[in-house]
Length: 211
Ligand code: SAH
Image (tube, rainbow, N blue to C red):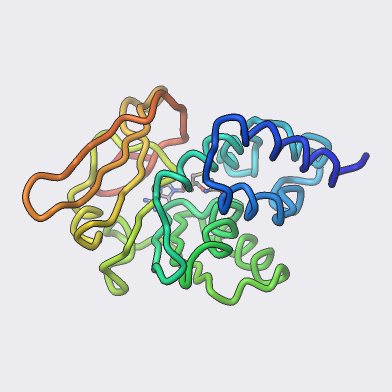
């Protein structure tokens, strides 16, 4: 199977909706097959989520691109990701910004993501195992925060870790169905935009869902 050709076709397909060329270029560089289970190599460039073990999934490439574009990242930014999972989204962020802090609840996933990211040479990503508080407070504030698991509401704890002017992109809704929200932190009233329906695995922890 020609994975490179499949990747090029996927990026072309994403380009019909995603206008940020930097995001498309980053995705064109990253071998998604390294972030999925071997049984799913064949599907690595289909535009759908895939299982990564422990009941979790690597997100659909279109949603990855949409969320990354929504963050409006700059090369000098420091970004926080909640839900490292396979590490694929973290790799894309690492292509685009100076520093990526990514946090994962399941230690085995954190460890395998760390290994792949290291193998691919990303020295600007730090993978941490989630603590009790949502996010990673000691490195705050962040220029952008991306949550790749579904929350019941916009967690106050994460807004507090966001710089003024920064964006938080997060799926919010029920355990089964959510809306993708982009919250821009402003001095007075935050701006909230709805980017459309989506479906993510639950964000687990204080201020989110019970396991
Ligand atoms: N971004 C990932 C996909 C993430 S799936 C990728 O590119 O592959 C969502 C992940 O969020 C799961 O691995 C799950 O364990 C993790 N998660 C759930 N609650 C969390 C929390 N409170 N903090 C950090 N990670 C969490």
